[in-house]
Length: 147
Image 1: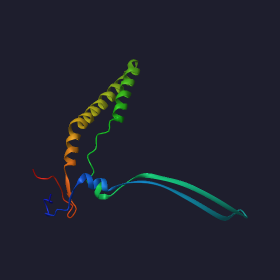
Image 2 (image 1 turned 60 degrees about the vertical axis):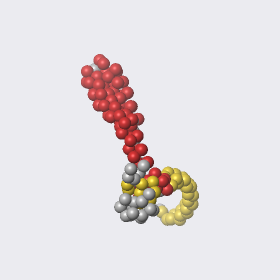
Image 3 (image 1 turned 45 degrees about the vertical axis):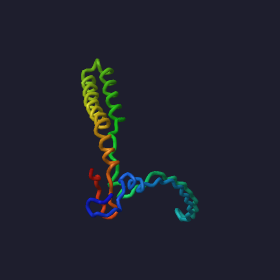
Image 4 (image 1 turned 90 degrees about the vertical axis):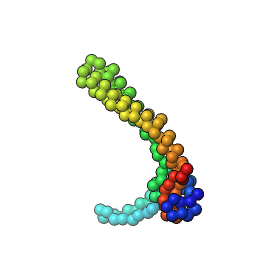
């Protein structure tokens, strides 16, 4: 396999380069401090301490630039559809609430439908294409192999 731009054989699948650019972080920091001060004619002394936990994922700029495609989130859309249905049912005696519930449920339902269609039809194709993509480690060119 050779880079289609510069011709080097120093190429790698973007999936591997992406995984190399991610690092899990889990640290604990402890701090102790002391202070002395004057206020209102007296002197005071204070001591304090703290413990901080930090966790997450660090990602390189390169890994961010070649990140895989993401699925469309659906959780909030589902809640809004259910909320719209609930408002329409609850508001069946109040025409304004009924109308708002129907509009909320309908508009949210449309966006939920679009997200489902994307996740079932578009996302798998984009992910397969991403998994077949390579990057040149010399010039940074991202490409699909020919053939």
